[in-house]
Structures are given as structure tokens and as C-alpha cells.
Length: 110
DNA sequence: CAAGTGACTAGTG
DNA sequence: CCACTAGCCACTT
Image (cartoon, rainbow, N blue to C red):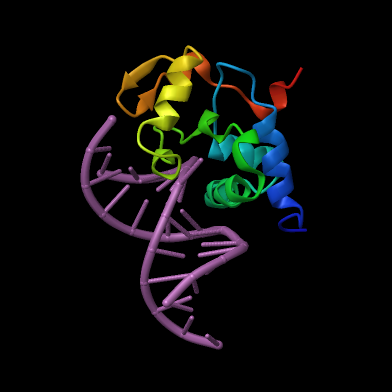
């Protein structure tokens, strides 16, 4: 089997379970879903679910492996970083968070 | 239907 | 961490 048909739905579920004040990466989600190298699809899926599901999806807690807010342009001017700062996320740069401090793995669901 | 695009990542240097 | 390459796959043109 390659990619699950309900891939977008799985992304939605994983992102929806990201704890407050924590973040994860596209690659982590991709691996958790079993599509490993297709991290790109996670970002794409997020964009689609964002339009479909709306603000219920805390996709502002998903960043790339460097902790950069690669998707901030899809939220609006400064919205993504504002949300993250509001949750106590430490920023190393205007668009980069401290991934070492806040990283959350999809498998860590409790 | 071929080529281009993109919210990515791992490997090399 | 930066620069570049290859792999990846849904979607658009």
C-alpha cells in the first residue's frame, strides 16, 4: 500500500491532537502516517484541510524541521507567530521557533 | 497528457 | 547553518 485514501483526514486528526504550547514537523506527521518521504503532502493536505475545516485545525503548530513558520503566508500577516507566542512558544527569530524546546511527536499522544 | 509547482526532508560538501 | 541535489506526490496549467 502506498498512500492511505483518508490521508487528509489523518493529517487533520494528528494536527488536532497537538498539545497546547507544543509544535511538530511535517516530516514527523508524514512518518507517523507511514508516508515518510512525502512530507510535502502534509503541508499540502494542511492547506486543503485549512480551507475545508477552518480554524478548528491548529495548523499553526506545524512547522518545518528547522522550526520555521513556512506556512505563515497562508494564515495572514503575523497571525501564525502571534498564535504561537500566545501559547508561550519561544522564538529564535521573527519566523523561527525553538524546536528543541517545543517539539512534539505524534506518537507522544497521551 | 507532459511539465511545472510547492506549508518538505535527507544527504553531501 | 548555508548551498545544492535528489526524492517525493497531489494538484494545476
